[in-house]
Length: 545
Image (tube, rainbow, N blue to C red; front, side, top):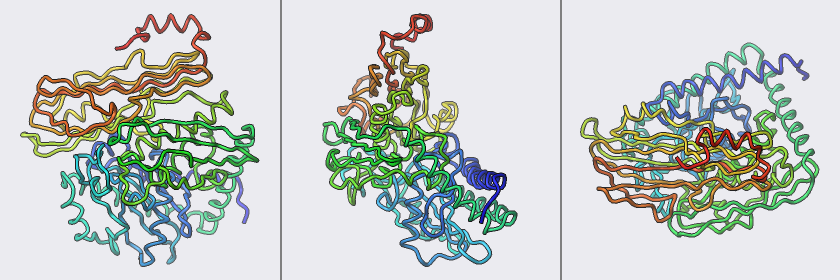
């Protein structure tokens, strides 16, 4: 069945708009600021037979674009008993997931009496139980210490909430009254998708939309191959390093051998470090998704669907920390390890096509969790991630205070955080001088300081790039490293693992000070124009803030 170009474009945008409306409902009805204000969520449409991605909203977190495909496939394989009106909930990292806080919901979508596709979403819940508030334990050595692990179970059965499942969830997490709001927000997003997709199929017909999906997948695959064909064939090797696993204070290496040949790329990570004791193991779905997102950064013009993944091949890196299996802890995989995987891909591609690449971005989400008791409002959990510098590139300096490279999420407004939690931001500023020097310098990280105003709280950190700064490209210098300092009763300390730590009990007046990394520099510093040097001096950008 052939489709004219206008109809094809309308259907393509219609499918994306369905997902974007799901994103908006998810955002506007969630209780947690990390979802409603920071956009740590995503919604998508997946194929009825194999769970492959059909569309994802423009407002969704990119790292979830591959992960939700694998999570949906896990549901297809394990739940053959689903009926119209059912919704599955799951967060099992080993079944197409990330860390336990990223909770997935999957709903079969029926049209005219048959299964037509799957609607899926993910929301980052600020807590799913575990050793520390927020779930980002840096010392966990098994998955049970990280929180409640849900296999694919029915949360909604024939349109009705299964209260027994809800009760189990709420009795195993902190601040349950907030989580029930997030649960209903995810359900509401899926039901919005159901209505909007039905309207699209009513207008154009299921056969026409099916044909459009096949054509869009093929076009995406062809376009990706065309972009890869412009990359010189060859094998390019690069490494990226994680500070430590939080338990053993030694770096972990992500070793990549990337082979480009005939419009296809193979990403071989089998030389990487073995599985680690701490929570920096990456599950297979996250490892694959990190590669997909990295390639989308390099070739952003290729439309997102399963077709753009076809020319990308990733051998299973068994025996490494990038292929975590039960019961390995994995809290750092999505927000931190994924960005180091991307950094390795950027470095390898930078050897092949430096004129299209950029130096390394900050590459850490800066995960800070603070949970405790507020005498004015009761129990609370705050999850905060922060921006950093992007690397310089072939045209100009890197972006300052950009979001993490795995997403489009943004730091929650400090005014909202101060309203929700018993704290004060005493400082929130650019971290001048943190960008790596070069012909085009890296962008700056941020410098913030939080003071606890009342009650008590327990802080934990799961960050990275505290030992090694984001590397430069073709002669550029690395960006500044991540820095954390904590003051308890006037005594200042720095985490032993630099970017990771937990068990910091804060009382009134105690504070946490974080400086996030800047991006790497692009090109030799001696090639930087004097006018740009003078501009930086005039603005005070050439020294630490």
